[in-house]
Length: 155
Length: 83
Image (cartoon, rainbow over all chains, first blue to last red; front, side):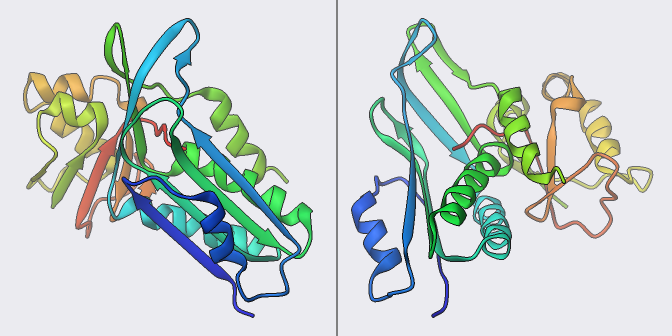
C-alpha cells in the first residue's frame, strides 16, 4: 500500500483520534502508531503565560515540513505520517502541534516521531510570541533544541 | 527581488515585505543583510546582530555566504521557535 503523508497548517484545533483513524483506516500493514502532541503551557519558569501567538512563513513552512517528512519516510519504514501545526492565538491547555507516525513495528514510529519534532522545533519557520503580565515578548530559541536536532545528523 | 521579514525582524523593519533592487556589488545573503542594515535606523536595529538572523531563498534555508543571483524571494527571520 502507498504511504499516507498529511501535512497541514491551520488555526483550528485538531482531533487526535480522528487523525489516527485517517492514518490507519482501511489498511492492515500498520502495527504501531506513535502520537506526539505539543500543548501550550500556562507558565514558563515563575512567569504565568496568558497565551501564545504563533506566526509562520506561509509556503516555506509547508515546504520545510514536507522536506523533513520525505527524509523520515526514506529513513524509516513508515506506512504514513501526519503533521498538523496550528498558528494564531493559542491559550494554555490548547494543542499547538501534532505528529503521528505509523509503521509495522514500534521502533521506526518512535524514532521518526522524535526526529520530526526535533526538526520542526529548529527548522520549520514558526515563531512564538508570549503574552504574560509583563507584556508580550518573542520566545527565544533554546540551545538544547539545536542539540536535539543535531544528534540525527551524527554518524 | 522580493524580501520578506518575520517575527521581530518584521516588527523592527516595520513592514512584512517589500521589493528591493540592490546594486550588483551585493552578491551574497550576508552582503544583502549589510546593505539593508545601512538603509536607516529601523533596518540597522533589525540587523544589528547578523549572526542571529536566519535567511531563506525561495522557501529553503540558506547560509550567509549563499549567492543571491536568481532569487525570487528572500526572507529574513530570527531563530525558529515552533513545535
